[in-house]
Image 1: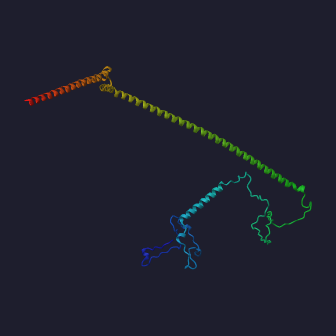
Image 2 (image 1 turned 90 degrees about the vertical axis):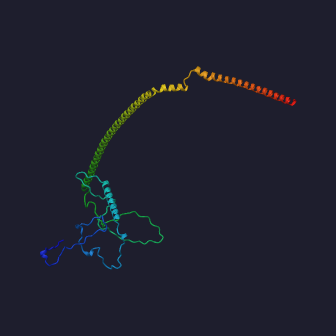
Length: 338
């Protein structure tokens, strides 16, 4: 792009002019988040082949709705699926079993192994044939498949001894056959030796791996024993510290109990003595046996004495009352006689 900006002196009373090289309008993405097209990807082509140019009748033009437009999320999901499929296919190709590499001095070639040799050509021969069968006929058995012949059939009559002498011409063929046989035998022997070497290497590798595995197991077992011994020593140390702590607590508790009970025993004995738990048997026998009996006997004697006095009081009262009645009766008789 070029632009012309004249100076103030050059402009004078003229107007501003601008010119630039024509270019194609940049194709903008409809959605954000996609990679913008750089200037190197611009396509400069014929406008007659541009899909954005509408041709023909525009009155009945079919306009796609907004929902019919491709979803960027769906596009990204399809791209991810396609990428995963390609990665899976590439992994399958890498993991697919292939033929071993040829030995030095040899190479792999394609060999036709079909039962019938066929002429390979770019154009496949085609031929149309028709057949009209009678009505209600059973289907004939399917004939054996015989591949169609290719090329022209030509016959030539050759009498005995005209072309070659068998005893003379068979030598090169026999040499070729014997050479091929020996070569195939050597290849098989070499293959067997290579397989034997591979098996020996595999056996040595397995022995080395087993030895390493046994050593690893031995080291793991040794580490396990060390760890268990360490845990057992720790447990013994913890138990010893716990027992020492319990012993110290018991000794402290015993000393505290002895110091606490030193003044408690005399006070307890004095309190028990005051409450009557420690007593004289004779005194207790007197208090519990003799004194109750004595009190009961005294009570009985007092009750008898009280009963005697009561009876005496009743007799005295009756006598006095009788004498008072006799005296009153006497006075009444005297007063009535006068």
